[in-house]
Each structure stands twice: as C-alpha cells, then as structure tokens.
Image 1: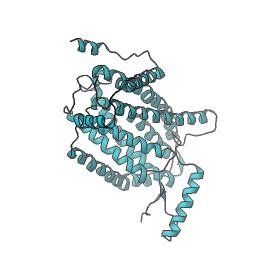
Image 2: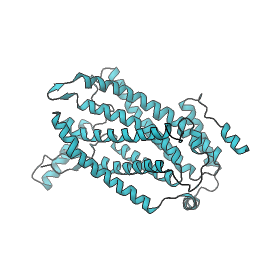
Image 3: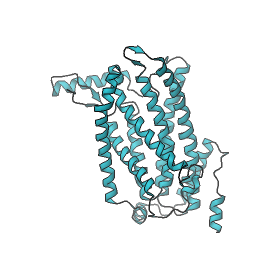
Image 4: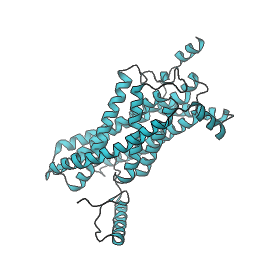
Length: 361
C-alpha cells in the first residue's frame, strides 16, 4: 500500500519548461549512471537473456511485412500515384515526387489515427497519465493484441523505410540523418517490445507521426500548385498554412510534449515505479538521440522561416527545403554521366540516392 501510494503521488511538474525538463531528466540519468556499479557487457547480456522476450516467429512477421510494404509501395506507385500524376498533368519534376509523399501521407494518417484510438478511446490512457505507462510493469508479460498489431505495423514499416531511403526516395540534405532516425526508431520499437515497454512506445509514435502527416500533405500541395499548365492559388494557400502548422506542431509535439510526457517519465518516473528496471540507460540514450535529431530538424525549420520573413524565399516550394544543393546536383549529374559512359550507351538515366535506376520502358 505504501509503494502504491508513493506511485500515485508522483506527478509530472507541468510548471517546468522544455529546458528544465531536459536538464532534470539528464541530471537524473547521469546520476544513475554514476551510481551504477554493474553496468558492463556481462551484466547487459544477462539482463537481455533474463528479460527480453522476442521469438524468431515474431521477427519473421516483421521481415515479411517489411517486404510487403516495399512491394505495396512499388505497386501503388506504378498503378495509382504515377497515373494520377499524369492525369492531373503535373510537371515531370513534381510528378516524380508525388508517389513518395502520397505513400507516406497515407501511411502516417492511418498509423497516427490508430495511435490516437489506442490513447484516447481505449483503456490505454497514457497520454493523460504518462506515469501509468510503467505502473505494474512485469518482465515478459503478454502484450495486448491491439498494441502488438501497432508494433508489427510500425516496426516493419521503419525497416522498409530504411531500405526506401537508400534505394527508392529522392536523396536530400538530411537523408543520412533520416537513415539514422529510421535505425534508431526501429531499434526502439524492437527492444521496447521485447522488454515490454510498449506502453511508452505508443506515446513515442503518437508524438512523431502527426508531423509527418502535415509535412507530406503540404508537400503534395506544393507539387499540385502548377498543373495542367496553370497556377492554382488554392494549393498555394494550403501550402502556406501547412508550413505554419508543421512548424508549430513540430515544436509542440516533439520538443514540448515529447520531453514532458516521455523523456521525463523514462528518466525519472520509471525508476520510482520500478527501481531495477532493465536496460534503463540503453533506452534513454536512444530517446535522447531521437530528441537531438528533432532539434537538428527544427533548426532547418527555423532557418526556412527566417528566409521567408527576410524575403530570401518569395514562395514556399518545400516545407523543409531538404532537396540537394546545386553543387550536389552537378556532382550527381557528372557521376551519372561517368557511370553511364562506362556501363551503357544511354547517359540520361535518372539518379536516386547516387544509384542508377533502370529507365522505365
């Protein structure tokens, strides 16, 4: 009863600001690290064997679903997104980008809607009570089917996304960071499932997917501004509104709510509920790495907004301005020609991520 009363009395100090929460969480993390007397590889391996629960069959499901995502994306690109772009008479440059944004927009709409359903319309009320995510945690406990489904979908999608960023998506300034983000996210999903930290995992996904919805929808409107040889003002207005919403939602969800409802709970409250919680340092390092990437991308957003305010950018052409620079384009073009002269008589093959793709017939 005393322990239960102690847990119930723990509250997240809502008066603390963003930096205060990060500092307090970091101080608690570093304090625990200094006091750790048995944090070596041997202890980690023993902890992994004692608490991790993940079967080979479950891993097979992830691999099969990742392959299915890749196949589904190729099919929808060929049979739906590309024909739709031609029907709308988009310019070639915009038509080439539509399938990627449309694919991501549809996925993140579905995944974030399902996360919202779990958090606000079921018993998994972790958004309003983040502390309850670790309350009653038991090693190797069964994962509810509705949460296991979310983990299967998200884990396989991020495995697919790592491949897609390398071989299917257009190469951008942040593509290397994006690959790192996908690997970190996939590792968090895999290990949080194995160690039964799935409750906090729902919150992590909820606070990140919403921004991708706004981003991809805004980018689609960028591509559809000029179609059929005419300029469409409505799409331009939607793009401008989307830029503002994207900037605000990024700060609010990833830089305010994420530290308050996730980082503080995993660094501080998790220890109050479970003093001997396994792989405490490993998971928090990954979450802090995710936070640093969020800050890195937010700097891009701030720089873009500053360019708009100072008149350096007259029109919103891309919400995050991540396309490769002119020097990089020239280098890619030269590499493409050199590669083509060595391997084929056709030196006009399109380049994606530095790899020559076969020309569609």
